[in-house]
Structure formats: C-alpha cells, structure tokens
Image (cartoon, rainbow over all chains, first blue to last red; front, side):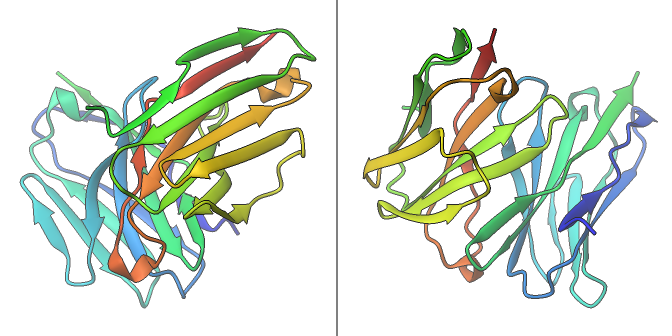
Length: 108
Length: 116
C-alpha cells in the first residue's frame, strides 16, 4: 500500500460545480496534513493546511478524519482557474510525503 | 524577493557530465529539501537537511551529493549524469522540523534537467 494515495483523475467538472477529492494515508502516526496545488510546469504551492476540526478558506474546505486516515478537499463553485493538480501532503517524524495528485479540469 | 530560489531553471547536458543545482531560501527556515518530479509527475523526496545536517537520505544513487554550507543554502551536485536523471528537481524549505507545529513546505520554481 502506498503511504499516501489519491485518485489521479482527471475530474472534469463544469464551472460552478462542487467537487471533492479524498486522500488516504497509511501511517497512523502522521502529524500534519496539507493540500497543495500544482499548475502545469510550475512548483507546488500551499493551498491550505488541514486541521482535525476542519477548516475553510473561501470556496475551499478541508477535513481530516484520523480514525479512517483520510483527508478531503471540497471545492465549491468551481472556477476555470481552479484547473490544476491537487496534491495531498502528509508529514510525520522526519518525513514529508506527497500523494501522486488529483487532476482537476474545470470546463466552461 | 523570491523566498526559495533555485538556479538554473533549465539545464540541458549530455550523459556522463557533472552538474550542480543551487538553492537558497531567505525565509529563515531551518529545514531544506530536494525533491525529484519525474515524467509521471510523482514528487519523491531525495534529501532533507535540518540546520546543515543531513536528516533524510532516501534511496538515491550516490552520484547525487547534497551540500549545505549554511542553513539558507542546499545545493545538489550530480556526477556522471544518466538519461534517467531527466526530471524536474524542486528545492523546498520549511520552518522547523517538528511536524506538530504544522509547518508547510515552500518550493522553489524548479530546475528542469534534460540529459541527452
């Protein structure tokens, strides 16, 4: 089993749609969690941290479920500019692991 | 005022050559990393340094040698380049090592290495 798993997609959604991604992790001792966004031929950029209580930043909501070892990202009212690859990141003791990413394409 | 900067942005070289990639961060972070992103877009950690000390050394050929002269710099030297080394190499930094402080990574804009 991979340490961090994501559905690679692509998720093709119309503008205005709501889309959700999940990410599972195998190490129960993992400490902190993030979602990153990576545009084509660019570096990954932090989208948001993920807290146990769940957190929201505008149209984006992140959730963490430690019992089931997964994190989620919900994007509401999708914009064309949301098209990118979304990377799940898990930090543990002396380790930072990236998922393979989920590709999102928002269609006009 | 780029936070994490790496040079060069593009590097095209022939098999067997030796090349270096430089990375500098002006964020005052304690930890720096090198990641490799291959053609399948998977980001794989290669090395991590905390305050100039090697913390992580994943299964990487010993042709790859990182060097950290101070905590703001982490350079990557590659000897005897092979075709399979072609990839995008990202440098990153984070504020401290202890993960419970929820410190994210900040990335440089990558070095696209092509070995011919």
